[in-house]
Image 1 (cartoon, protein in one colour):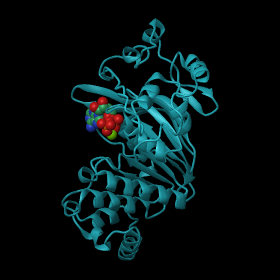
Image 2 (tube, rainbow, N blue to C red; image 1 turned 90 degrees about the vertical axis):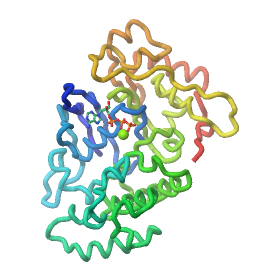
Image 3 (cartoon, helix red, strand yellow; image 1 turned 30 degrees about the horizontal axis):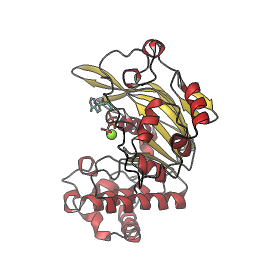
Image 4 (cartoon, helix red, strand yellow; image 1 turned 135 degrees about the vertical axis):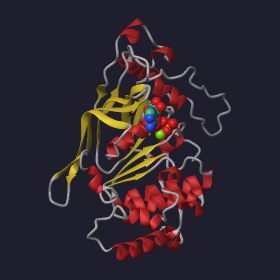
Length: 336
Ligand SMILES: Nc1ncnc2c1ncn2[C@@H]1O[C@H](COP(=O)(O)OP(=O)(O)OP(=O)(O)O)[C@@H](O)[C@H]1O
Ligand SMILES: [Mg+2]
């Protein structure tokens, strides 16, 4: 279990500070794939960085804490302050863009061994990594390349290989397939899914693509303007969403054989630089009332394991019971 307790993560810039994640509470059970969805800029990557413990200027953890249910080599509890000592071993991160996060002038193998314990035999580990990379269907010498020498798909597969080599308890994958063509995208997702089946670890997976979420995640967190707005089993998210934003995300998903125009979501999220009042989704929400504009809805557990932050979640629940589901799980199937 990873527990996020009231996480507030802030960027400090010349313009001032901005809370990119603002009061997120969440419990992520072991051994599941958690999907995080939400529009660009809502704080998905920032939340991943905080879970990974990659917090340094300009990003800081302004308040809150994270607990992980495992201990370090000496039996001490791991916290957000010392999780970086577990990078690659207990927790790994497949970043949004491997090109911008890999150092272009250093060979990939060197970047990997830099994270290893100084006491470990680097040559032996690298030999094992080469064998592992080969098992995953890549040329073993790929790890000896500079990042630019590999195609985007290969680089991402290498990142997946390195991120899973030590069988970490937690793998954070931040849009691992963005900018790749559909075939490569599918092969990388399948690779991740197969590894998760073998290793039974926790994967936190960020994607804009609701179809991909439907296919590979067990639970989903929907974020909006730095807030968690809904959290539930993925099947519930797709069939009985409680937050109007989630409902709109699900309804924007094209379905096979459906030639109706899909609704986009009109409007834009609020600027996080402005002071926030009430529900942050109110300006775009068809259900919004004075209450929504005045008072921020609490992130509340409406059914066991189903959380939402909407003043009218109860009404939504009754309506989806009355009208049947928004989409059946089958209809919600994406195009993967
Ligand atoms: N280095 C930075 N300095 C200042 N602000 C930042 C920085 N990185 C992100 N932000 C701001 O924090 C907010 C959240 O950014 P984040 O990258 O977490 O969003 P995201 O949901 O991952 O978006 P995307 O889907 O585009 O990747 C945004 O408003 C962004 O402008
Ligand atoms: Mg991001």
